[in-house]
Image (cartoon, rainbow, N blue to C red):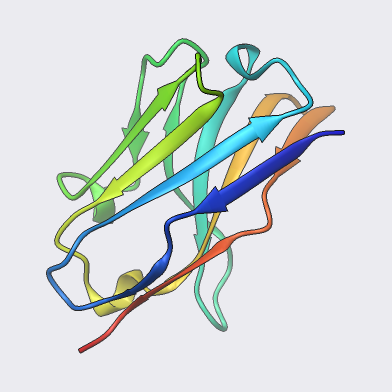
Length: 117
């Protein structure tokens, strides 16, 4: 059974940091590129960051560059999103996504991140 389980979300003050984790099971994690998306209330889901199957080629949405870092540990079947200098507009549900091709595309259940004073 394929599972992606996100954790690490919560309430943080502006300027604070959070580290999200997404642990995978039920498929060969190291064969999949991994992505983080987010969806704020009333908005479409947007891509936050992506990383290749071997950990190379990380890339970020423009508004996250310099603040967010995506990484992965294939030995632990886990992808991370380190988020620094958080802003209220970063408030959203954050989802991890594993993709190999259009037929093999899996999603986690999401974790809430709220940035508020």
